[in-house]
Image (cartoon, rainbow, N blue to C red):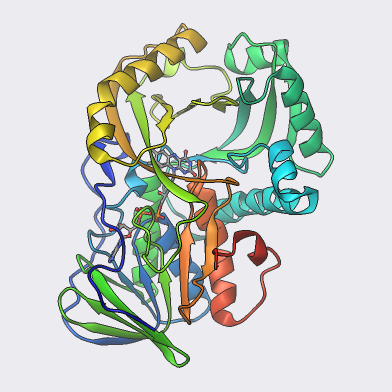
Length: 410
Ligand SMILES: Cc1cc2nc3c(=O)[nH]c(=O)nc-3n(C[C@H](O)[C@H](O)[C@H](O)COP(=O)(O)OP(=O)(O)OC[C@H]3O[C@@H](n4cnc5c(N)ncnc54)[C@H](O)[C@@H]3O)c2cc1C
């Protein structure tokens, strides 16, 4: 099949403002525009966290990999990430169970928990310096789950072996200084610097033989039983056994956007204030809509975000930056009155939402040998780690026990 009309993916203004990770400028990773035709085993489109983890997995499988990006390595939405690393899916386990049935919902949570462990392992194996810290995570009551519902959520997780439990007001106060009647405490979460992580993954991939071509835009796809040919705006062709579209919120047009939506989100980071932070420095988020989430950084800043809106217009998103940052600040002040909430960095970006909170990862129906990764949801980085495993197995022709959970709509 062929898609020869116009661009292959939607084009967006993915983020605005300055994410705290870019305070010293963009990541430096070697790349150059594609200047010749190429033949490789797998071509990966997109050089964000999804492309980087998928490439890492394909290199480990012994594949020759070329990566193309219309911007450059770590220049899409990944630098906007606040990078809380959690297994919690946007839909609580109790809600997901109602939507998907218990077996599938529990499997999705287990897979997510395994993916966080897998990513922690790869960071250690590769010796990546990305300010990774293991953290606990606290899930506060809100208008989505009240205290009673949070207790049920904790039980549902505990009884299937997930590392969560309900904590009362005293334990919550000791961990966070927050005055609420209770929360769900989960272990095995983490925080990191997403730009440092992905730049490190790309440097490792380059040293293991991958090539990164950027800025290089893919504008055409032809696929068949024997392979895939991508064409670029510069007029070059890449022939490969398989193609992986890790294009984030710039959805590949071959994928039907049912169940998946691009929305808008806002975030801020304070100045360093290590003496004012909550004792455990755990990740904190609310079972609320709109929600607030927060974490700390290695230099003692507080990052807070949320206030998501269900539109994708960049003009509206950017016009709302002052109002949304004020709303986040006010919530933060109310939650933790001892903090200095003045923002030193503010930013806004595209964000992804899906009706189940699950990502879409796998073969693109109707496009042979082509795969897509849509890590849409609050824990998109965890989903990128799942994608690395699912796509590696698919390219090797091996089954993945959870592929059905993430399969793309036909
Ligand atoms: C404010 C914010 C906070 C977030 N917080 C968290 C969090 O706390 N925890 C978490 O786990 N996740 C979080 N996420 C989500 C997570 O950051 C994203 O899921 C993830 O960064 C997406 O990475 P990606 O590689 O899929 O996309 P990107 O980083 O956008 O990479 C896709 C790349 O594809 C390229 N591309 C697109 N089309 C083409 C084409 N035709 N040709 C060539 N190249 C192309 C683009 O240039 C881009 O560089 C957050 C996101 C935002 C915006």
